[in-house]
Length: 158
Length: 158
Figure 1 (cartoon, rainbow over the protein chains, first blue to last red):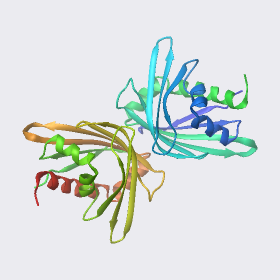
Figure 2 (cartoon, rainbow over the protein chains, first blue to last red):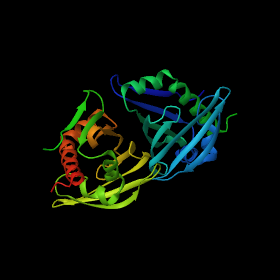
Figure 3 (cartoon, rainbow over the protein chains, first blue to last red):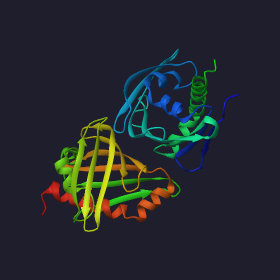
C-alpha cells in the first residue's frame, strides 16, 4: 500500500501544503528530483511520457519538460531559486499552456527513522482563484499518481 | 509632486498589488529595471548605496545586489523566470538575512498616453504572516522611496 498524499489548504489563501512520506532514504528521494533521467520517469499523472528539454539543476539554474498523452502535448518550465542537496528545492513552475501564471514551490526534504523520508512542499499560487482552478483541474490526481510512481521507482516495487 | 504608490491587499491573502505611474515612457521605465547601472541608482530606500554583485537579465537568468547604510549590509538575490522587453518581468526575491523566505513578483509594464507609463506588480509571499511581517518592516517606505528616486532619474529632476 502506498503512503498517502496529504494536501492542506486554508480557505481564502493561495497556497497549499503538500506532504508525502516515502519508504526510501532521503538521499534517494532527492536524487529522483535532481537527476533528469530519474525525474522524467515519475513526474506527472498516469502513463504520460516525459521528455526533459532543458535541465540545469543548481541554484540559479532552470528546467523545462514536455509530457505527451493521447490528447496532446503539455510543456512546463521554471527556474531553481535554491538547490540544497538532500534538504531543499525552491523553484518556480509554469504550464506553458497558461502563460505567465507562475507558482513557486518550497520543497523540504526530511530524513525519517528507519531509512524513510518525507517531502513537505508549500506550493504558492498568484491568487486564490488560480489555486482553486488548479484544484479543479486535477492537481491532486497528478501529484498522487506521480508520487506513487516515484515510490515504486525508489522501492523497486513493480 | 511625485506620482503616488498604491499598495492594495486583500485581508487573509499573502499577496499585495503595487501600482505606480511614472512621467516617463515605458521603454525608459523598463530600461531602468534591465540595466544594472541604472537599477543600482534607484532600488531601495533613502540614501542606501547599492552594489550589483550578479546580473544576468534574461528569462532563466538571475541577480544579486548588496545595499549598505550606517547600520550594515543587506544582500538580496533572485532568479528571472520571465523577461519580456517593455512588458513583463517575473522574478523571485529573497533577502539573504531571512534565508529561504522567497517571494515572487509579477511586474507588468504598461504604456500610458502622453509618454507616461505604469508599473503593476503583484508581489506574492509564502504566507499571510510573511506579508504582514514585510509590511511592518517598512516594505511600503522602501518601495515608495525607491520609486521616487526612479522617477527623478527618469525625468531628470534634481
